[in-house]
Length: 249
Figure 1 (cartoon, rainbow, N blue to C red):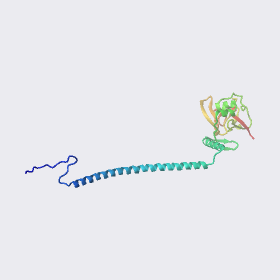
Figure 2: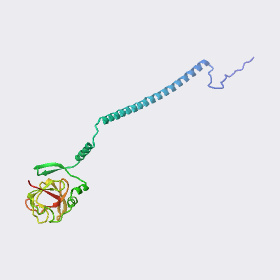
Figure 3: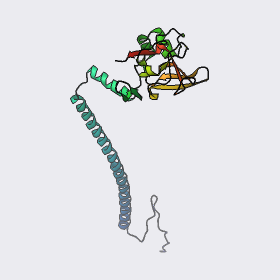
């Protein structure tokens, strides 16, 4: 009987089986490879999970720390507010007045009674308050830069000894020793008590001269001209309505 050569059979499904290798060894290799792939996947997942947990935990810790700090601050502020004594309305008003005074400009003026210079706050008031304190003529002259009619004022022909002060704030302005008869119908002086007690504002006109104001309350007083007597050669032409006189004692 003749034997014909038979080709090795191929599997119908799956990978080709090596005829020279035992079947058991091939299955063992496949199992090892499958296990290695599974372990590799597990390592990757573990790495990702650990990274997420690490950084997510850090963010959570930060949030918790911030919340705790804020809670401590709120508790501290509440405790401070509870133990702080309540301020009465009068004390609060005094505190606000002190803060306002700290922002008020100051000016250096000469005071006759003290025979020296003092530092005082400038006086700033609303228009309505000035109207309550001054007569209509005084308000018109000092706050609106008006001019009283000549020969009608109280002091144009006044010769008593004493000090002429600002009608608005009482600043010493002129001494009777420097008063002279200018023939203009307004009180005239050849110098102020102190240069610091008045301020000048040029008007740009030789006719009206330089406007003169009180340094402390900015009341309009009059004008100064260069046609006065010696030793200054100046004539301070002042409205009576801007002055109040204190007789020498």
